[in-house]
Structures are given as C-alpha cells and as structure tokens.
Image (tube, rainbow, N blue to C red; front, side):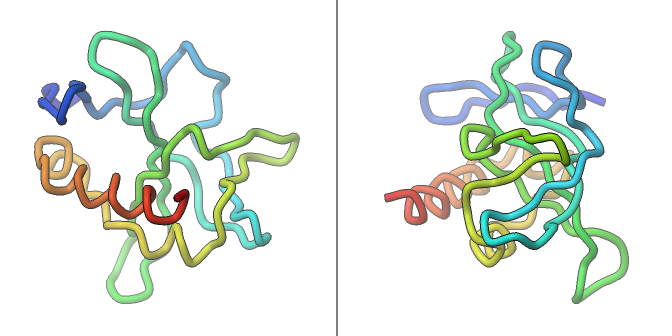
Length: 124
C-alpha cells in the first residue's frame, strides 16, 4: 500500500511496492560487495509522480528482536547480476544504516536526513 508523498528537501518521495519501470528484482537476494547475502529486496522508494527509484528496501533477519529489520539502500549503488543484486558497499555499511519502518519512516524527514548522511559519509 502506498504511503502519502512527503516533502524531502528539494524532492518529494513516496513509499511504494514494486515499480514496473525497472527490472523486476523484488524478492531477489541482495549481496554486499564483500560477498555476504544481506537479505532480500522487498520494495522500493520512488520519486513522487515518477518511476525513478531512489532506494531499495532490504529486509533481513533481526538479531535483536523477532521478525525482520529493513534498511533502505540507494538504488544507484545496486547492480543486478544473474544471481540477484549486489550493493557496492561492505555488509557492515548496510547493516549500520538507519532501520526503516514502513508507514512510519516515509513521512519522517529526520529519518531521510539520517539515511542521506549515512550513505554520503560512506560514498565521500
């Protein structure tokens, strides 16, 4: 279910499920650049009113609580290969990203600021 779009600095984003304009990779495994499987891609964050993917939502088993944790990964850092998708970052960088809570984080500008700061530091 789509969440309402929110103002995020100079762009508007909305949380969405699979986006038909990109190659289908929902449910595929995401591996880190250093090899380990991080989890599976469960959805995408797209630019409001467009099919431009900003982030992939990655779910992986939670160590500290029951169920799964989710993180958002900049889509620009994800490459597809024959066995799934690979993020051009080490596993620790993805695991240390802010936890994404669907329906809550979409409207939280502070969350998106933390996400952008986290990945900007890694890619600088």
